[in-house]
Image (tube, rainbow, N blue to C red):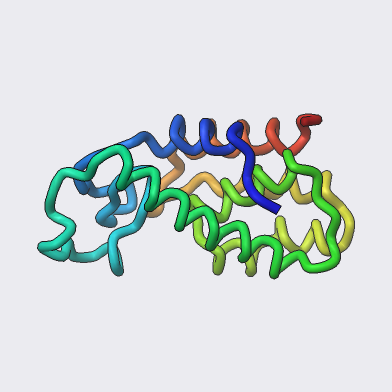
Length: 150
């Protein structure tokens, strides 16, 4: 299963698209559409430049491949609709596959309780120790995407 163009549009909206490296709200070095650079703590000299839109698209495609595989691996016997898959990839893209693996969202989906999974989703709105309005909005959009029918 691959992500849809609707998810890519949502990611670009919430992550933004930056051609030059910047520090995200959690203080980590990032570029493009939310791509974490290395360990995020220091900026390697080779990344300290302006990226073309084509380079950013390539980085995003590689990142999404990793998150698509991760979601499918962690939910091996779960049938997901495209909209559900997209929402879960967005969540993992934002917080990491490790967070998704340990999440109450994944546990609820594995139990077959998708409603509880979406209620739990709305609890993941912190970065740098504080609640961020942008993350609250993103979680609401992910929930709406999960519940959509496309």
